[in-house]
Length: 483
Image: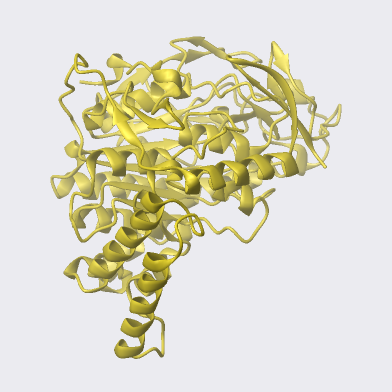
């Protein structure tokens, strides 16, 4: 069993393994069920923030996207037998973009053509959580807090859903596309795919496969409408009449009933058509059809048009698959770029054509980066999880394999951010760490909230104490990102 060290600015070191993580997450979930109404707390003197966006789309590169192989190119070293690992900074040559001072890596040619609409952060730094476990860093990215927590911390999408509500009353305010929970670290991922103490009505509407999204807004196949209505009525009565505490507090039970109302409203609404990719013209469908992630981007565009508030599309996290490149880093990266390059660029162009990009903030991100030599960061190395030979003779060792937390890239479009803007700088020599304008999760979240007009100091009273939407209310919007 893997053991990880949990460190936070407020607490000392605690040894935490995967089983303990699950125990604490489960305890926090039970705490959320027992909790009452989470009352919002915001100082009356808090400055009003003028929103620049109505909708957020997070494009999640789950597993660790290497910055030097994607949006922050370094010296290119082509493969040849006998290479020393410390000589390899990037396994792809750089390419030009439509912005003279921004270069990307080969394989991102479509994105290169829309960089004049983008803000590119090259200085994102992941948290110091000790031994690296993907689900823990993903938990921190999505909630703003390092696990474990004594309460069930809400996903950023749930915070936005609770603070702003839906744009379209028939459309779920928070929709999550692409992640399954029956593989790998599924239980750990469930720990942050939740509204936590905010109540289930603000939780994610989960679509594991975008091609089957329409099935989520229809009664089960083979079930008659009358039988479906009968089941729905029975479940509501069960939830409403259960003894308080059996399935959570009165607030949580009422929140569950409201979530049922929301789901039922969607079934009979014209908005349900947005989930049916079969209604998309073939020419448009084909532009996105690079696989599950590409079709997730298409679904995100359709849902944005229909009035969704927060959408996340994930490449899906499964250990040792997709962006979790513990071997064959270069060859797998070729395919990964093909899966994201055209659909992300097309999402930007389509939203722009429809007049929606200015009010839609797109955020492409990953939990941390990768390096061939360093696990963690130069001044806080952690135990190596991948063996790297002294000399590379096999192509499977060519590429970035280890988890690197001292730099990473975040790509943003629309929603009031600058166009053709580059933020932060990393070293051109190993370690390719952040040198200027470091960005941490509290400030990145504060910037997303700022775009939506939400204060980073917003808090909710839970267990007789405030729980802030950025850690301890300390998140600061990065004003330089905004036009």
